[in-house]
Image (cartoon, rainbow, N blue to C red):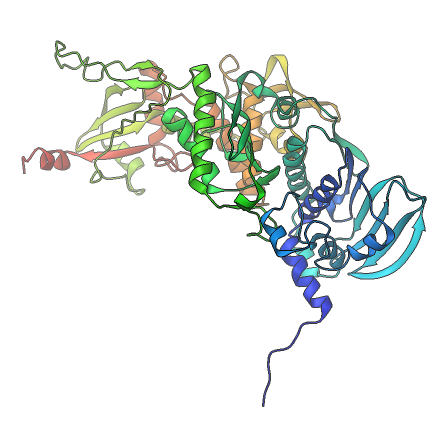
Length: 582
C-alpha cells in the first residue's frame, strides 16, 4: 500500500500559519499594535529599521504579562480573549485567536520583554524560528516590548517578495494611521532608522485626530455623524460633497473599534451622496459603528480585515439615516429640478436650457443621457492620416463640455476635458524624456502637511518630482514647502498642495509597482489632470482650435491618461440610417 498523506511537523505547521497571518512587515506592526491596545496601553512606541526587514519593535505601557503567560503566549491558539465556543459570538477585542505572536516568532528572531505592575521583575524570552532559546528575569517598566528582527530570515522565498524599503514603510504607516485615528486617547511615537517620523500625542477629540493624522485640509469641510438607538451607535465625520478625493483611501470604517472592509458600509456611503459627487471622486469619511458583539462575525478572514453582519439590512438602514441626517443639516446636497417653459421656442440657442439647482433632503433625482450604442468609437489606425487629408469644421460647444467637429463623412463629439488632458499629458511626457521639466516659482511658498504614509512616499519620490518641475524644500523632519511647480500649470488657478496630494494618492494606489515607466506615467497623468481645461469651462475659439489640432496630432488621441475616451465618431451613413433616409 502506497500511503501519501502525512502529518506536518510542528515547524511546518507554524510556517504555514505564519503565511496566512503575516504577509509583510506591516502585518507584524498591525498585530503587535492591536495586542498593545487590547492590553490597555496609553503610550506606544514603534521603531522600524530598513522598512521592517531588519527590525520591528513595539513597546507599550499596558498591563504586561506574568512569566507563565509570556511563555504560554508563544504557543499557537493560546489567548486570554476567549475560552468557550460562545465567546466567539461576543468578541470585544481586536485580537482573539492567539495566532499572531507564534506566527511572528516562527519567521523571525524575536525577543519578548514584559512585566506586570505588581511584579518586581520582568521576563525576557528570546525566540528564533519559533524555538525558545533563552528565558530570564529582566528589569523592565510595566508593559510589554516585542523586538522582531530579520523577518522571514528562514523563509527566503517570502523575503525575496518584499518590496523596497520605502514601499514597505508606506504600508506600515498606512496600518498605523488607521489605528491612530481610532484611538485619539492613546499616544503613538513612530520612528524609522532612529529618526522620528511622527509623534501623535493624546488629543481630546476624534475630529482633531482626523485633521492631524489623516487630512489637515479637511478641517473646514467635516460634518459630524451621530446616531444611536437600541440596536447600534454610529458616530464619526464625513466631508461635504464639494470636498472629495481621487480614491477611497480616505474612507475608513470601524466596527467595534476594528478597521474593516465591508461592501454594505461602502454601498451605504455611496448611496448617501448619490449623484452629487462626481464619478471617480470620493468623499472623506471616518465612521464608527458600535454594535452588540453577537451581531457581527469577525472570524471570517485570517487577518480580520473583513466582517459579516448578522442583520445587514438593519445596519445599512441606520447608516444611511445617519449619513442623510448629517448631510441635510448643512443643506449641501443639491437636487436637480428642470424648468418646464412651454412658451420657449426651440432654436439653435435654447436647445440646451439652464438647470435650476435646489436642495431638498432625502430626495435624489437622476437624469441620464445615453449616447447611441451604435456610434462608432474611433479606431486607432487613421486619425492623424485623416487629419492630413480631410478638412474639418468646428461647429461649437455643447453644455460647456463637448466639442462638435464636422468632417466630410460625419462629425466627432470630443470631450474637451479628456482631450486637453491627453494633449497636456503627451506634452509633459515629451518634456520629461528630453530632460527636467521647466519650473515656475511660486510667489509665496506653499506649506505641505501630510499624513505619515504620504510623508514617506514624498521622500521616496522627491527626486522624481523635481525632474517634473517641482521644487520642494525640506525644512524639518515632517515639514515641507512647495517653492516651484511645473511651468505647464497656471499658478493663479491651481492649488499646488492639492496637486502634490493627488500625485501621492496616485502613487499610493500603485505602490506595489516598482516599474519606472508606471511611476513616471502616474505623475505625468496627475499633472495633466490639474493643468487641463475643466468640464465647465468655456474656452475661446482659438483655444478650442488649438486643442483639436493638438489632439489630432497626439500619439494616442483616443483616450485620456486615465483611460476615458476623448472622442467618438458619428458618420453621415449612421445619421441617415437613424432618420430612415436609407
